[in-house]
Amino acid sequence: MITYKKQYQIEPQWQDKEWILRKAEEALQAPVRHITDVSSERSQGGIHDYYSNGDYWWPNPDTPDGLPYVQRDGETNPDNFNEHRMIMRHMRSAVVYLASAYRLTGEEKYAERAAVHLKEFFLDEETCMAPNLSYAQALLGICPGRGVGIIDTLHLVDVVFAVESLKESKAVSDEIYRGVKAWFAKYLGWMLTDPNGIDEMTMDNNHGVCFFVQVAAFALFTDNETIAEFCREHFKKVLLKQEADDGSFPRETGRTKPYNYSIFVVDNMVNLCQLLSKPEDNLWEYVSEDGKSIRKALDFITPYVLDKKSWPYPPDVMHFDAFPARAGFMMMAGCVLGKEELLELYRSLPVESKDEEARRNIAVRQPMLWM
Image (cartoon, rainbow, N blue to C red; front, side, top):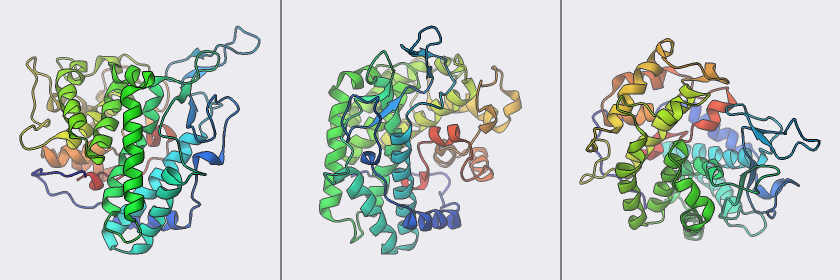
């Protein structure tokens, strides 16, 4: 079970209640979608295996068949197979909005529909997704799947909080609740032992951070305190080393989309602080021996999300106008650290971005479920 014992300097309040209820009503009417609804002839996996292609990889202009693909960093190939990612995000969004509406209203209709999504996506033999990402972000002509593809399931971290919010409902039976926990326990085991998972675990950029956001969320959900403690120590001893003395993240500012990626990595470092902090080990207040901390990272990025014109690095090659978009770190850090300017920014930004890149990069759609 995920539990928290935090004291917030600013009492968090549900935002956009009407929006949440409207999205939940839409989710009541929307079809339930499954990984098995569509497949790619490019995939070397089976019908239950999640599949995607590397975002920034394109056909080789120097070969007749376009193989092997070549990288164009920051430039998304629109011809990539993206359907499984969209199906997973559809499920996530539906469950999260339904769970939020259930928590707001107590109406069982929302929990009943969420239970259908959870059962069919994770548990039913004919439609479930296999608990692995062996074929994620495949590179045509190079490999059937990569460790960096594990970032695709970052959207599932919201789901475990939604499940916890739904478990008091009559609609979410003990069988469904325990079944979903068992799925995440299997997936967590795969992440920590498969070569693809180990590759991602050791990445020294936002991929390593996002890997541990998932591991932390899934470990807490499945009552695996040993792995949660491993994540706390990794945050302090490894992930904070990505931070420069000024609070920036050089592996992100050196990319072709430095603004987007700088926000993204801070957002997920904040997610880790929210997930893993406890009274006796508060990551929000932790400072490493060489002065690295989440506060320093927030001090670096906050002026640039408040005033984008002051950004000192080159503009992103794509989607620069889409950011800043409303992100969970603004609400979480605003509440926990008393940063009213971030809370005001969160409230002022559109509830949901119209830009696909922004929607893809925002893992936490309802931070109130986390708080």
